[in-house]
Image: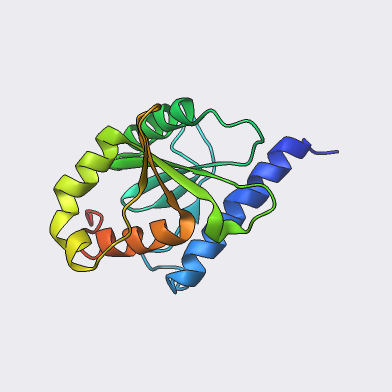
Length: 159
């Protein structure tokens, strides 16, 4: 029998991918905006999901370790060559829209610095700050709006 924790994690990654692609209406397989699950290969992890310009680290566990996960996501973003790493933590008994998306204060500052005008113009959702732990949190539904806005002001380098 397969590892149940790994299977649960795979289901969660797929649910996040399907949710974001659905609400943002991305479906064509060659569309650069399509959120994709990544196969893990090599020594340097590149995150669970790629949603340019974000690396998404998906977590489906009961006991949160958000600051540790954020550091992990930020390292994986560097490994993948993406500017931002975020964590998507499943909320027990809730669907993907209500999952929590956590981002470090430094990464949030970079997002604002890079995309402030667009985020302000489109009245993008402002995350909630956890002053004790030093990170910001959106719901996944709110993050989908942020993702769409940020993508409107940037695209991956075409080679």
